[in-house]
Image (cartoon, rainbow, N blue to C red; front, side, top):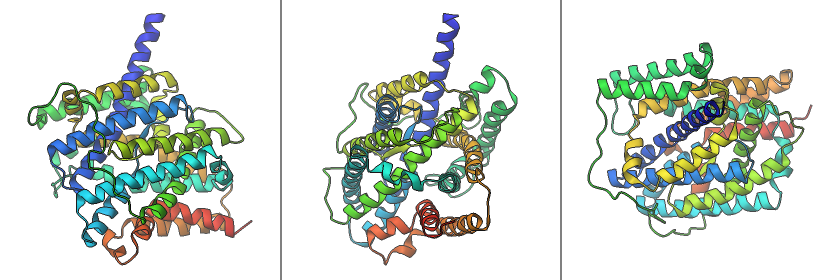
Length: 427
């Protein structure tokens, strides 16, 4: 019995570890392309990302909200990184200087989040996160990131501008293997659907397309570098950006906590303590990301999709996987090998977990009867939120930088509209 328990815990740890990796690999590559980083710089960013994701996930699971919720590079920060790259060039700022300003922005956002959590300010705004708000957040999150994941599945990330047919075919095979096992299989096949899908996809990719080889020599052991982009540059414009981002990120914390509690079957009347602790630790984790020149992490609502997909509800394997990711980050050769998980395969596994998140979004929105008022609010939020996602970043160029970061993000626009309309238009 003990051997079975150990084997089960080991496999669950490995699957969480693979999910942590799959959720962390794609976005550093995207940032590397935006900021024209070379292979060595992208590898360093990948190492620091693994380290900060592992630290952030462990601290939240141990001291923060204390739930098995992965901390990962946030979609909102990808938007901010992208917008700052464009606005920086327009204002004559180099890409390196923009990255140094981003370090400051992440640290400032972390300070605001820490204060909101430690002073228990975040719990005051908890009542505004109704099922309609959290459902809208989940839905727009899937819309925003599904485009990124689909591009990855089709092999369109990096310098590629045309669909890579072989890579796309393998990505869709991986997607349907993960989804099929999680729905139709039983026992361990269902529980380890993500792990099995990625392994099958990776092997097929290596056989049909070839494994990606590492470039150059590297140290066997290396500490993640502090301020790898250079020392932070302070700019007064980052203060409003950091403040608004911190407010919005609380919605991310709340949505993730609510989603995972629902999947775990834990019915609670309020989440004040979890939200306060989660916000406080999110502040600390943002500071860590800024110091280590990584992409700031937030609790990922996709964790709820992963738990629902695999049925893994035990927190210990999640904590073990977070520690393992931290350890791995100190060994660059291992980071290079692991980060060679083909992007189409990693994106396919993540896309499969989003299917469950869509279901969670629909479930939240329909928890209460949809009357004319709610339908109108949802319609306005979805139209303007999703419409904003299709606008090129350049159209906001004439606005102040902090306004650009807010109005160019469809997730923020849609979620903000639901919150605003629900408060102004009372039943």
